[in-house]
Length: 268
Image (tube, rainbow, N blue to C red; front, side):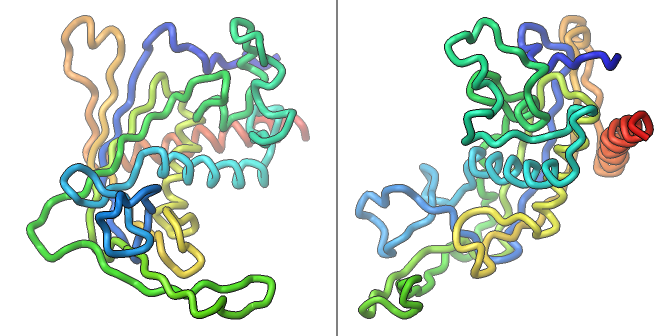
């Protein structure tokens, strides 16, 4: 019998992983602000920080990562290996059986995505910081573009309704920082593949993706892992440069493949 995993181990810190990298806009990017406050000249401004510079919310990145992994896992589902994805909007979503009984959450009945990124009754193991723009002293990173409202039913312009929207120009760099508590190698394989899908342009970030916006380059610069023992003893964390981190990411991919292949052989 397969030993059940214990993803809800937040009462103890076995290890914590930190990944640091850079996101660079390959095409224009629009992550819209809910309210422009009346200070922007465009109809649809981008989200800005206190410096007036655009940034990418960690929640937006996590949402893209989650939707990317959900679609991949559903296509290669293997419930015996624990690799499947629920429909978070359905009555059979992970955690629905625990509604009103939060002290009795059956974590081993959660899908791989909810184990990793959380459900409404299970906290996420992954935390993504807001990706703040790097200052380079160059030109303004924000451009204005024109749009025209289209009636989708009539397939034509609606009364000459023209609007303007802001975009972050191509070539702008944002700092990326990802934290994972108590990472399991096979789940880290999912994380690796999800980020690779974003870097390869298969998943876009922000709005107007059907117009070609939202493609990002991704460069991982370093990683480090600490354990409870190393923290208590004051020891330095295990650190990886770009080359070592690439090898570690390949090892995580291998752990995921081994988990899938192992259960396929059992079924055969």
